[in-house]
Image (cartoon, rainbow, N blue to C red; front, side):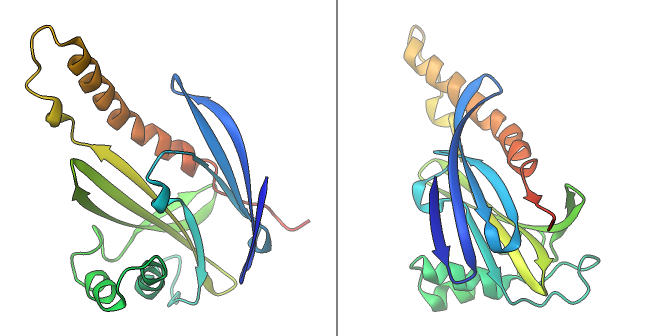
Length: 197
């Protein structure tokens, strides 16, 4: 167990191994003690620099849940904390095409209303999908961020006759990409607010 103190509470991280869809994943359990929120996420599911994060900040939440909150400033602040130039982060996020659905997409997970903001970028034969699930607690936005990484399996094509290693790598690439939707559903199923006793 790892306990991390932050300005907005304590994050507790536990590890567990879960057998899921025929594969073994080591899951980390994230819990924000102050807001009684927790979720699980597979270790090594994405690049180490893109580990899941929980952000809790002031936001324009008026009208939630009928209207999704504006999280642009939260995302810009997070990107600059990670080392991105503030001017570039500001310019990118405020572009009209940064989010797949600029108004957010309403979701209900475990009877809790959320809004999903998603964007994607590509580099070196991979597509990186960035997910921001946001809900409102104590008049602030609680944002859960995680990323998936989909490989471009076409890099293995055309398959060479008799090259069993290439064929195996291609098949594994297709399977890993296909399994990502199931892994994401599993992550979302662990979102939980523990009621105050």
